Each structure stands twice: as structure tokens, then as C-alpha cells.
Amino acid sequence: MSRRLVLTVTRAQNGFDDAGFPAAFERAGFDTINFDDRTFLWYEANGRIERLVRRALRSRQRDNFNRALQRYIETCRPALLFAFKGDAISAATIQAARKAGVRTVFLYPDLEPAVQGQSYLDAIRQADMFLHTKPNLADHFHRTIRPDARFLYPVYDPALVSPPCEMPRESGLLVVAHYSPGKAELIRQIAAADAFDIKVYGSGWTSDFPQRVALGGPLFGPMVRDLQRNSTAVLGLLTEQLANFAAGDAITARSVRVPAYGGLLLHQATPDARVLYDSDEPLFADVPALVARMRGLVDSPTCRLAMAQRQQAAVLANSMSTDDVVSFIQQVCQLA
Image (cartoon, rainbow, N blue to C red; front, side, top):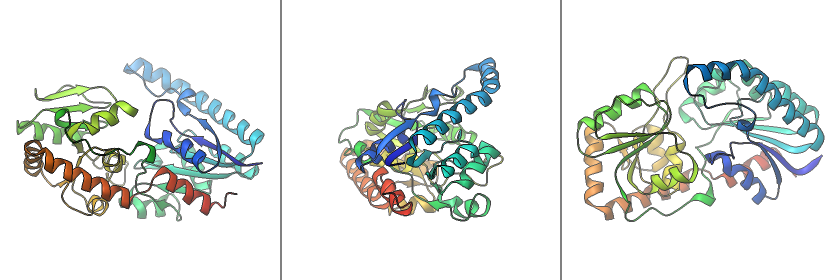
């Protein structure tokens, strides 16, 4: 067994935020081999025909992915298999890791693991450690997933931390998020105030918005970080409770990463967001409060910069970096 080798399952290929974990393990002195499941599985599909084909191929692609992962486990015998979400990993792969003496850790960043299917539930229940980033679901995860599930705030990559921008080049409000009905309705209410332009990027959005709302496609990696840092403010929208979900969001990855990487996030008010920011200052409870806050930020770049600096300082103090998570895993799993 190579005690200094870690197999990671992260989406490093397309600049996703979990791409920072392999580098964090390397900074801790480990060698890493990364499996980006997007090289095995077809995720993006445009239109009904592509979705049907993707569904027909999914089982075979998932099997191929797990066979490849098991071959590396059996051949290389790493110290650890670490998966960020890793919803394609099967229970058989976790069993192969245990047989080889490999520790296994999942970090789950979404709301409800059960929607990923029984195979995924079996895998995370058999792993050595299950971490999640949803404080309002801690009790739910303890009851329904596993009693030793551990909560971590969403994680930031220390290599991407940047100071807030003094004079952002984008004067409106930026939204980078997946579509949900609740988010769309809130954007319509904000646009109805006719106070500033809104740019929306992400998947699933349709064009039934007022004229002041501009739609773009999904953004990842450096492009989205640059846009968030150079906007007057980013809107921190939360997914509402959907069918088959125990609850909606209280915080998201954006809650931490936008401020950490130099942007200013105006966040829907929740108790967990208030704890994260040590303040009500970046929170809004309704549309009039948000509009008033945005007008103040546009009128006073100096106040905007000071607010962004305070928010970033709170986030860096209250959350964990990828390096912190690697150190925590190393201690708990007693990796040599």
C-alpha cells in the first residue's frame, strides 16, 4: 500500500470549485490521482432526445467508471479514497477499498443524498466518513443517512482567495445559480423594482423575465470568479424546499466562496448565514431591503469595498479551506 497516495474523485476538468482538493492533498505531502467522473459519464444533455440517450447509457457508464476506480484501488492501494459528492461511486467500490485497507471519505455538498439513488446511499453509509455542508440538515442526515455524519461549512480554496475589487466594472446585480421556481420568482420581484440591471447565469433558466434581466449560460472556474469579483454585488439566492427534499437551503457554496474570492454577496437572510457572517449587514429579508442596499452600494463604492472586506474576513475566520479539510481528514483517518 502506498501510504502517501490519495485517489480523489473531483470535477477538476472543467474548473469546478472541488478542483482544489487534489492540490490541497499534494500540499499536505500526498501524491494524488484524480478521477473526474465527467470523463466517464455524460452529464450535459440538450433536448429530450439527448436526455433519453444519456439515460440509456448511464448504467453502463457508471459501471465502467467504478471498474476503473476499483482497478486503481486494487493496483495502487492508496491510503485514501476521497470523493467530493461522488454520486457515481457504488457500494462495491467502497467494499473493494475496505478489502484493500483503503480509507474512504465523502464530502457531500448538496441537499438530499437520497435523490442520487439507493446505490449511492449504500456507498456513503459504508464509507469511513461522511461530511456534508448543510447546517439546517444536520439532524436529518443523522437520522436518515448515518448517525456520525459531520457538518462543515462550504469549503474555499486558499489558492483562489483575492482581495475585494475597489472599483467593480459591472454595476448591476449578478446571479450565478441553477434554476428553481423560487429563485425565478424572486428575480422577477427584484426586476419589477426597475432599479438596476440583473445578469443571470446558470442552467435551466428560461427567457420569461422583464427586459432588465439578461440571461447567460452556465459559468464555471475563472470566468465566474472574475465576474463575481467585478460585480457591484452577487445575489445569494437559496433553493426552496422541493419535492422529495427534507428542506431548502440555508447556505450554499456561494455563501462562502463568493466573499472568499473577493466578491460581495447579498444573501437571503437565514440564521445560519447570520452566524457565518457575524452580522446582518449582507443579509436581506425582502425585496425592498435588497433594493435599498443595492442603491447604497452603487452610490458609495467606498462603503461597498468596506462591506466586502468585512464579509470576507468573517468567512475566512468562520469556514474551512481545502487545506483545513485535508488536515482534518488526515487526523481523523490517522493517515501516515
